[in-house]
Image 1 (cartoon, rainbow, N blue to C red):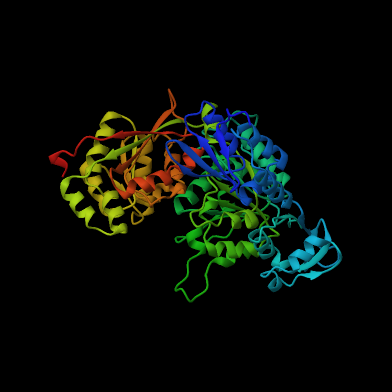
Image 2: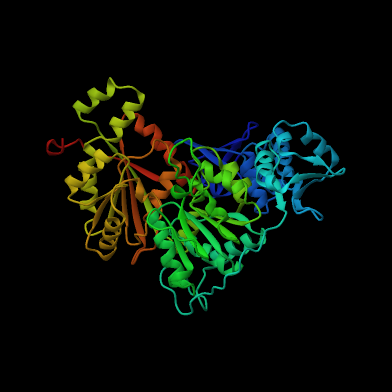
Length: 565
């Protein structure tokens, strides 16, 4: 209780971090290990300590006493006794329940508790009865192996995380090695391939879990290489699920460029091809395709097409509900999730934790920036005024329509043009949500537009022209939120987005994070209409990046010029 700490800890598990405190930055990085940023205001940032944030911290090796000691160092007036007790109670639950293979019957798994009282407590909880748990002793319950995933999912929901030691099948073997020689791009400088130290550590910790977990790294930090390294370590047939067809192409290129796998060993299961091979690449959209809402998902059997030894979930934060359900059925297969952020706007982070695995490795974005592995980014929120005509419409519109009008403010075109002029010669991405706005922008800026309707070949040609320097400006819809390899893009201008999506903000900034020649700097502008609901959502969008240490400078654009109205 020294009165000098940067934080105020409260009984309700929230922690206020004073923005003007000299220890603000270091305190924020420390809190991020076991708490989630939920509000970012000029005076204070509000963090919340949740069961999931504590269990992920525990999975990373933190103890309750270490978390409490951290809070005691940071808290200006000490830690409320009730909060200390709650942290101990929640962290202690991690590891009290474990899942094991049944020694005599492969159709069963065994749930073990550290005390008979805990199993007694579970027997009284609704939701577990349908899983056919049967008491097999003072400290054990038997459960059908087919319910392994559902059991973990339900127990996590009820507040009892399970450590899964029931084992994994080896899968069909597949020999692959790194291609020797100096790699290009994100490999690094080790002997045969050049895994960076943090990539090696990520694979080591994933392998140490036995075969299930999530690696969290920013865009441009080589998450794909981590996936390849896991494959090389396990030497087994692998199913790779990605966010879109562009990502499928990029994974294939990485596999062929960096490993000894041959073209015929890699299959693409997409709208254009139906190839199932030792390494198969598909998309979440493909797996969740069905002819009508009443019919089955026609491609979900891909999970059982071969004896996969590993399933990689790229951009795991995008995992759709039907894939969660399928994943619950394949808990005996090793699973690796890759993502830049564990945030899900639907609140299903707990399902990622229980069905894919806990966070096994995370490296703060700013740490990678300091090491030069990603670009240093300057973030600017540019407040764009409304002209009189737009303001009149805005005042008489409903809530949703107000947001739509503010997001589509025509004056943003002028602001974007000025930014492009200011960064003359740089490669610029203009990213937005609404097609009519993007079409108008593309016309004003004399730049090509890529949307979901753009054929894949045309997209690839435009991406290639941008990478080769033939195009300096690309206008892109949300299709560019994920898995677009544009390493030289150094300026991103966000003109509109999906309400308060923290996930989307992180992905869009990620488009410009790849290291740059020279000063290794990039610029991220988000254009927000002043005195509108868009500003409220912008505050929420920034939360995850604020947690990572990015600060937004707020500037005001000049009044709209007549020529752009």
